[in-house]
Image 1 (cartoon, one colour):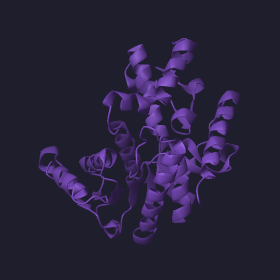
Image 2 (cartoon, rainbow, N blue to C red):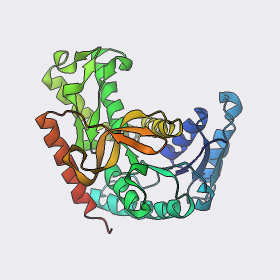
Image 3 (cartoon, helix red, strand yellow):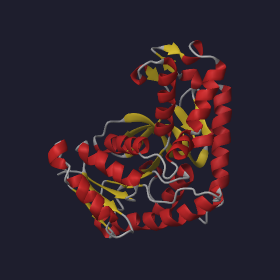
Image 4 (spheres, one colour):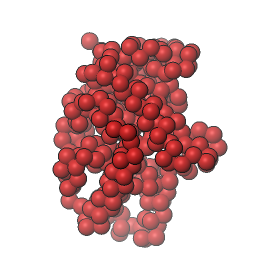
Length: 308
């Protein structure tokens, strides 16, 4: 029997996640959105590409959350993008309301599913989803670290004119400004990055990675990134459904790992059929430990603003 996933939010990210999942032949997909016609139309369009792309997974759109019943994985992309004049607190409050309603539907109609969060602010929304769902912390996690890692690898690849496949890097911590790039562990063809680039150039890459989403927003004028975010989410779905056990930097609920507790933050985690199979504790430098702790404390401050 083919696996089933649900995607909440039929915007650019949600529709792209759905498309990537069916094209990779990972699962049948239910695309859910409150706007009438949007999920149905996008799902039908994707379905009609099946004979061309060579997939036979089914995809359908709906406005009825009960149709997520039986889903193995639910990906949550729904939420507002930050608009001019909107503070981070305003965005968090608005998206917390949306996420809470979605997770209550997941709890009602697909209580046995694994939840993968994409909605921003990612770390806080993942923590909220965990609390509202009542699920084991291993079954609720977020996509961010993989995206930030991919962005950093891309910028290193561009700077050194070396294929991204030759670069080994990882970004932990919160999404964006709160990220913790592990420069001490970053290798290019097995060589330390610090031996290949000046500290000034590495700092510029780190800054560009932290502002990766904003750079795309500024270029697009309207809208935000969705190709790389959807690719990251689909990779996590694949690791779950295929029980790959891939080690992916993910926003997870920590319970003592890295000396942190009761907070959601990005760390490397082995992802398989049961969700977070294992949190990988890397040997960090003192600076990296301090950065990760600062990142976690910032997330905790924002968590306290939620009505939990």
